[in-house]
Image 1 (tube, rainbow, N blue to C red):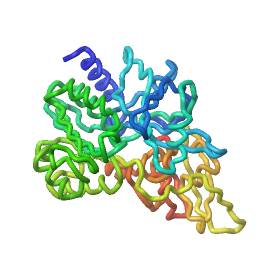
Image 2 (cartoon, rainbow, N blue to C red; image 1 turned 180 degrees about the vertical axis):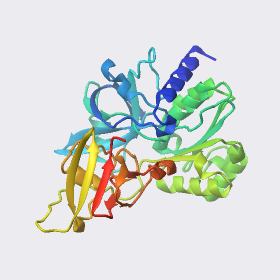
Image 3 (cartoon, rainbow, N blue to C red; image 1 turned 90 degrees about the horizontal axis):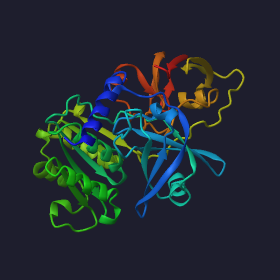
Length: 391
């Protein structure tokens, strides 16, 4: 094992051992810190990699597991804008004191205010608010010796899988990683050089399959859009689900759902499938929208704990607002990022009362069993609801 690989394995084991609740259950308390942009590097015509310096006093706040993400916050045209982006590199530290830098990949979305601004305006030396790493899109395998991990990514969905693949391969000399990566054409492939270098480094343990939907490849199986028929052929000829210990899926909602349904249909246990969405394709609800409590109106009473402090807010029944929206009216520092049920930043534990959760693309079944909810998607169903962001 190379010295760099041994160090990566040592750091991963150290971080897993210190994480409360194990590798998937561990989450930092979500906090923003202002970080300096150290580098902005083009990946494709429509995507960039942004690297932030992490000052020594904040290194512990930015420890992370491969697969986790951060939220970025800035003000555009007088409005606060937040977006979540996955960390694209396995954690690399000096002397185990936490990361000296963190990197995310930002792909420009059609009409996306933040991604367009980042592509055209963000430069080295700028400062941006960056939340501490969050998310449970991480490996649950305690022992990677002999393990086979597989990932299916589309477009910018490669971002967390880059870090996961590098981490899995570095932590064991006998682990394997199979990656199916779909894009429209070769010019759209993010991290093409890094993937090639990873393949050169682990030629027998990394299987890399590029699928191009609008460009002809030598192998017909790898040419065209991934639909159910093509996916089943890929599983029959390239990946072999019966050999895979853990699956990671990241990309557009329709593709991720197709992969989940197909894998379960061929016998893969849902507990072995991890997935992450950057968007559901649905409009994102506004977080912090103004709500007025009329005198004499029927209200829900919401109580929540954050940073050891208790707060109370009343929410009009006919306003149909989320717990997050109500909480933001009295505590602007309540953690959230996407407000669409995708990132999990706003999660809290339900202590008392009942809520209805509209969507959930972030919480795992074990988190739901322990009483966690996404406050951006949770609406009161009882007169009094109590949640705890600190648990």
